[in-house]
Image (cartoon, rainbow, N blue to C red):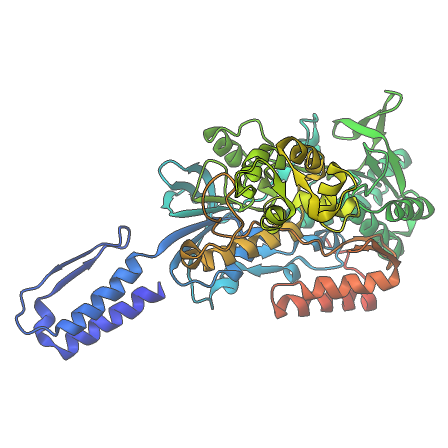
Length: 587
């Protein structure tokens, strides 16, 4: 929009300096970007008109980019997009970015909700790229006609129900995901989720409600035990961290305020698998289970929830098939992610109805839609298998068409193969091989490097096990953030890379790909376990557990906030908690 303002200022100055321009009618149509001019003046400065026309043409050529969502992926994309040749429109039902890794801390008042959110307009207002924001919900995506249908956020916009359509040249879908209930009866009606800031605030009020309810003189002892039984379904990072935060909240703050019920509070963690935190190193899993056991948190592994009623959770033991019921006062459901309805509808349109998330290629483009990109929890990268392209790879490498590959021929395409198929590099690492030549030697036998020659069948045999290393990326903030940064850099260099592609060889075509494929770089993960102890698993199989890791967690999470305002607020919240404890007011 800044571009339009500059043009109109110049037009105004031109009319002021040249009265003969008063007979020039200029109509700029914003939606189409066209220019119609009718000139009747004889004494017109042609150079001024030429300059004006070129600026209008520049604006009219701006590509419209529509971004759906203001989570980790969408916000990272917006923050890193710098090319002013785009006109960006953002559609999201919330007008802020939330630092979701600290949501468990918000549930117990360790950190306040306002401290972890930043208005999206603050984030984009100083950018050179023109950005418009609409607080609305996307209700339909029409990829064929390049349109997005939206409805204003009825809850926030004074019960407004306005619907509107946004056109796009490029669409970035970063809408996140819903909680996966696995269609378990009663979950939606009776359980709390922990995906949004509003969820954390609701949980905080419910925890206080349970203590206030249990303190009433008319409530029986049996009912008090039920009310103060907190059940957490799901032994992943979110469930474990919430259980740890709740345990600290109860034992450090609430038992001082509610001494009459301190001995009957119970926290139960239900996990269908054999262990909690099964995505972490086994040392962390064992430590977490032992710590929870010592602190009185009841960890029930191998227990699958089959039904949730208003006052009871029904579980099934995975080993014995035994069915039992557990009375509870509050239940948190944290068992993975599910697809949003609008994304499901879009997947049906493009023939991906049987998938759990949008399938993209390694450049984050939705398969079957060249100008639609998907990133974050709503999408998954459908990495191409080496064996699908093995013949094309062999043909591309065999430049002399001899029917065999020499080491020299293969070395010319090794870098492109590893870049295009990351599972090759991972396979070599797991097999402790120096490079892919070692893999070829293993297939050919113990022969000298210079004398290796492979035919197509031997080549297939050498790479036959490589695809077994393929894994889907985890649905984490770290992955979504890196995808947003990557895609923004691609958009920043779009025109440059059209002329000079920088990606690997097209094995099934000619030339090179425009960009290098997305590569996720894992920087480690944390699991706060309460009591000022955190487990950290960092690259290189480095594991640390204890208070030193807790301070590392503080440092990393403070530094990752999107603004200095958020950093100051989060650090002040932690300081306040150390000095004064957590606030137990029900607001």
